[in-house]
Image (tube, rainbow over all chains, first blue to last red):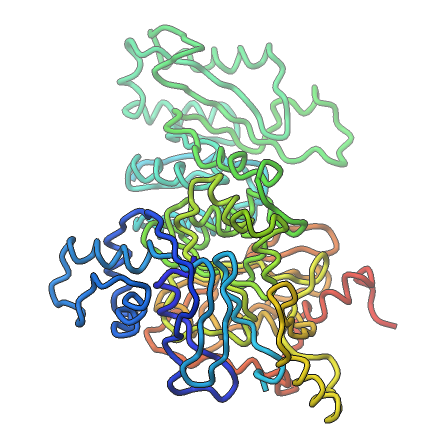
Amino acid sequence: MVRLITHNLLACHVKGCTSNNFPLEFKDVQVVLRDSEFNPDFLRGFIPKIEWPALTGAARQLGDTSLPDQLPEMQDDDFLKVLHHVLLEIHVEEGTMICPNCKHNYPISNGIPNMLLAEHEIG
Amino acid sequence: MPDFLLVFAQSHSEFRLPELESVAELYGFPLSLPADSDPSRPFMPLQLESEEHARLLASRCILIKYVYELYAQGGNYDELHVANSANIHLWSSYAHDTSFKFLVTAYNHKIPESRQRNVVEGFDYMGFMGKIDLKNPQIILGCFEEYDSSAGLAITRHDRDGRFRQVYFGRLVVEGSARALVKTFDVKKRLYYGNTSMESEISLLMANQAMASPSKLVYDPFCGTGSMAYPIAYFGAQVFGSDIDGRQMRGKAGKDQPPGVLRAAKQYGVADRIIDLCTFDVTCNPWRCGDLFDTIVTDPPYGVRAGAKRLGRKKELSEVQKAANIEHQLSARNKLEPYIPPTKPYELSLLAADLVVLARYLLKPGGRLVFFLPTVNEQYEEVDIRSMLCDGMLLVANSLQDFGSWGRRLVTIRKATDESYPPPSFEEEREPGGHVPGHKDFREQYFRGFKKED
């Protein structure tokens, strides 16, 4: 867990941290690959929500370079299978996600990220 | 359009119609409920375009026990037989050599065997020549007498016999197959659950209100031990869960095992569809954008067994305390002693109102919010629910599960707009003067035994 689909949806939400707060940077991660059922309809529905550079950046940081720099206009099954793998089959089990702006650390433990803020960060 | 007879399970009558409507909408066929349909009755005649639609309803509605093709009904047997004779075209093709079984039963009553035989003989004019086969009949014919409840009536079974409200007759089309899921998801057989886990039948009804289906993205912001996630994922949807208390999702098994929610999900073969579980307070949430989810479905903690919490402190700290506290937060910690921020109670009526505004932000156009709201029966008014709605959000259904002095309402709300909305402010101070709903301070009312304050 902490799949890249989730990573692509989470921004730093510390009070006042509203710019350059996405994507969070991975640090000291343990990655596990797990097969997952391929659902092209789900992927097509989700593509409009993807921040593409954030996704390719995160994938490369985790050692996967299979995605093209730009979201291709033709989204055939071959492409969707690659996207499926990156979005849903790479799991970050341990490590930290760090806000590029305020440097808040969001620790990941046993696959569950702790996105709770400290008392002084909620304002 | 052919007439059908729905035979409902004898529970959760207020959930029957919303479930039918949701499942019909899910499969994209029209459902025209008769204006006089009374969902508190266990038999419901219903016109459907085709037998296929009847089968779809029976495959997914948790509360449907059987669907019959309705040949006739009446207030007495004379009326029934006149109507049945007029519908000879519906059953004459079975008369020659179709093997059959004949059921005669009653609701709220038991028909003596001798009269059961008389009832069957009363259908002699149909001229069914096929073999009677009790084990593997080609068709099953059913005759149902519906009695009003005998509770409180000084009348013997013998005297009551035959004094039914209505009698129905037809051919079994299909047995409800979704009802078996109530056992499949039985909480007691689940590998991981907690004391607030939702019973399986209700969680399945919620999944139907949520119209869970493949390729949908669903979010539970008060995920807890994951009761909602399992049936939703079972119906094919992908689920996100979050909770302010990560221990609910993890369980006590420690780091060598997957989190508890995933262990239970694996038991049901749906672990892969739990996309992720995150620890955060929904009032300080990290979602990057809105218009994300097809459905938000949740059972918020309402304070009987577990109260809702949000980040913050009940009492403000002094400046000196604040400084000391920040130092405490920033001091280096090992993994075994993570910093745990303070929380304070999240009052139920505020939580419910926030949930609607949050859903308007996070749902895709047309998406649904499905959640439980506990209410005090004596104080509940319809306006309590209406006043929670905001611009763009429409009430779809509101069904009570009654526990006597209180109950909980399964509320279904639809985002009926294409517009995008900003995230809610989650401010704690609200404009005074608005409607005060009966569910405000539910926890305090519960522990007071729902008596009025002195």
